[in-house]
Image: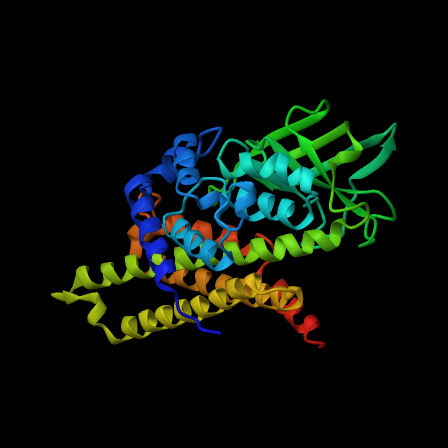
Length: 380
């Protein structure tokens, strides 16, 4: 496994960085924090025109037919610029759920519009008290005529407030903690009884709570087969975790660069503070942690592109997330501290990365959860 970018990936990275730095300065994060939508439709359309939304989508559905290694390149640049656009909800989760579990009819109906930027998706699977257990589902789905009636509530649905379609996990059999008997359903935004409320997160990543008050969907709304939802969700979330780890890699890289610039320009006792040995050691550790994270994120993305490797994807997704969470939290905290008093203010950009590090840490499972998962996967 070669943990280096290809020439094509380097070109993609340069293009993405030019787009993010030129079209999305960090001041947008502050401007959009209180915005009810939370992102720019114009910028989303531009990202679709660049092909970013369909990187892993086959060409027959309008995508580029590339792989997760290429998507990770774009996600890294998005994380570097703290892009608020709904890449996680629509691309990492929504498109992946359709690709892995959708019927041919569902793929034809949704993927071209998703790739074109006209249709946004979100996946509602988290519930109160569920922690990171994908099979712990209290939301119920009962047969109603020729379809289903869904009742329950989902929390922290990333980009759920703007989604045109939601993928909802609901229990069709068994008890709340039973990993079996969970089914995924496609639910349109305009469904009667669907209540969506915008949530405000500390890291400025848009989310929503979703209540399903007896909404009805047809039999063709089932995604991936009745009772097969947990296994499908695991595969979807593993791949989304790899994409998020790449986003975190971009964020920690930007934080490191910002901190090094400050160490080179801020003077104390007539010399740059970066000349102090103690700060050199801390900066060196930040660099090492970033490069370790880079290696495992690249390995995980390549595993996601390999055929028939779900077990390896699961393990490397958890290794990548644990590594990225530990590194991002450390680097963001060190960045704030080395900036001194100004680093504690909302006016300085380093604090935005600190908040994103904390929010990303708990998304899809924190470092402790993923280390424990790796131990279980390895038979301990």
